[in-house]
Image (cartoon, rainbow, N blue to C red; front, side):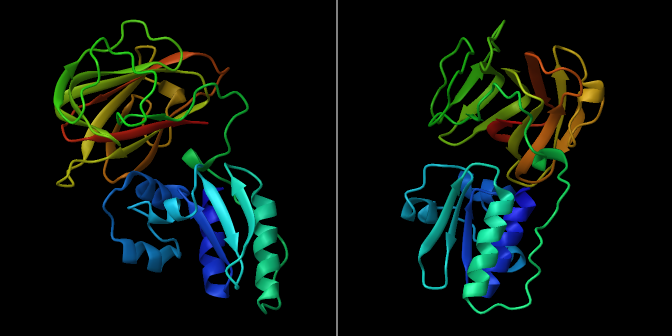
Amino acid sequence: MKNLALWISATALICGAVAIASGTGDEGLLGQFGLVVEQDAVLAATGVPIDSDHSIWRAFRNEYWPADYFIDAKGRIRYRHFGEGEYEKSERVIQTLLKENGATSLDETTVRITPEGPEASPSEDVRSPETYVGYARAENFASPERMARDSRETYSPPARPGLNQWGLDGSWKAGAESSKLESAPGKIVFRFHSRDLHMVLGPANNGTPVRFKVKLNGTAPGGDHGSDSNADGTGEVRRPRMYQLIRQKGPIKDVTFEIEFIDPGIEVFSFTFG
């Protein structure tokens, strides 16, 4: 459904009513975490501005992600929506604003998208919150070592993490928004409860892909692998975006996730669940 929000944004910009999707889709993820991208190219291709310095975020005094603000041709905010969902209502608002601005012959049916991978609707049994890996907003960090700020530190994983606890293993440098693996191999462990597990990841600064291998409760995920991992747990990070690593097919239960990065330089920003 995030594609729908991007479509709304692009269509509205063309027709005079603006929908700002703050932190929606890969472009929103890039803006949220301040990753370096070709902003003009993304704007031209999608109609979605990149907010790498959070200036739009601050101007709206925004506290939510994703957050949609629908603005008419006169610059008035006509509707707000925070979080996922209500996609059909959002599209109806756009249609109304387009008509007010003179658009005719609109198809008033709503867009129907069959979302896949990380864009699929979340399950009804999500007990793990979005979790940030940078020290500025990190919570439930459970490695025995204290998270060092902006300096290299060797960590060991928690032996028996509780639900929603996580930890690092190996040599990492924790920044305010992300943690970077200084030397390979390195791991992250997370005990979670949801159908899907996603991570926002970026490759090494030189653009070299970073190989990884994931496990659930100490073994390869098999049929529970995500759209960005294989049944044996292997995969690669080639560009900064959100990666779906786990999709549990059976009953949802507490499980321990482990990801090992085989190459150095990976940047880890956050975990999200669905």
